[in-house]
Image (cartoon, rainbow, N blue to C red; front, side):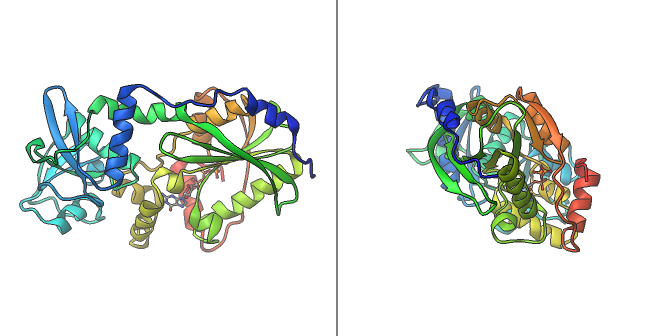
Amino acid sequence: MDTGSPPTRTHMLSGLRPDLSVTDPAFIAAHRLVGEVGAGRPVILRDGDKAVLASPLDGGPILSSDLAVSGPRAGYLGLAETPTILTAPALDAALLMRLASASDIDLGSIAVREGGAVAHAATELAKLAERLPAMTLGSVADAPADSLAADVREVLSFRRRLAETVTPVATAEVPLAAGATANVTAFRNAVGGCISAVAVGKLSQGSLVRVHSSCVTGDIFGSLKCDCGAQLRLALERIAADGGVLLYTAQEGRGIGLVNKLRAYSLQDRGLDTVDANIALGYHDDERDYAAAAVVLGHLGLSDVRLLTNNPTKAAALQACGITVTPVPLIGPVTPQNANYLATKRSRSGHRL
Ligand SMILES: Nc1nc2c(ncn2[C@@H]2O[C@H](COP(=O)(O)OP(=O)(O)OP(=O)(O)O)[C@@H](O)[C@H]2O)c(=O)[nH]1
């Protein structure tokens, strides 16, 4: 069905505030730190009267043999599942990298202590910058003169507030190979994370919606390891035929980013499944957040949707953001290459497959 470009969609977007930028200094301080960590520069984290210099192991200078790791990584290493500081016997970059990401590591010579809010904020910052969630820690006395600083609480509340900054930026008509002309709107947030809404026909409550997480390997390169590309094409065909909207969200690798997804693939080649590979790298099995997608649906005037998904967690997460969700199955083909991946989705992540 080619329903053309619906004038109502333009109206839905036209009443929006043009500028949803958050002006709260706490948000801005954390935002700047994410940029610094992404650039590989150390930052200062303050916790009450304590202050620590932290540098991403993945791309930054090594400050000391004290390494803050995330709760999932600590749990993977057989420790309490809470942010932890591991201290290596010597300043050894290769050993620190193994402590952060190797699937087989002996903690024999490693001192372990609870990391508290500083380790939590440090690893959260690294995640926000799509770096391995591991930071070496040092003294602020050694901080470069122009180092940026924020309070740990500012860092830990940043992610929750990021969704508030999602705003539509540009819209254009795009003819789809799936057989309809879509209105494509690009939304972005304060760190640039993009959601594209590919809408066909007049949207109304109960419209068909797909919230797709980007998968460069599956969606673009045609990887056979996962079912992402097949699900994307099926969803676009359904939406082109029946009307609805596909949100393409920049949550590559279930929110860990492409670099880390490829690291996870390497661990999978050594026998870990998709869930354990994420955890071994210090991530939760699924780091995605659907608050931004819910904000976009709100912009589109949708609070009640038929959601193309087999993932009950995704449906529940959108429900928790105030969207009424009726799941609609979206089953791609099982192939010899993706059979294990789909079996893990079913057995460990509860997907209805
Ligand atoms: N970390 C990680 N991410 C993967 C892997 N394979 C695919 N992905 C990512 O998984 C996301 C798709 O999530 P899935 O769990 O496959 O499917 P879903 O979106 O949760 O569920 P459906 O709505 O039923 O499709 C995309 O962001 C992919 O990049 C993998 O082996 N490891």
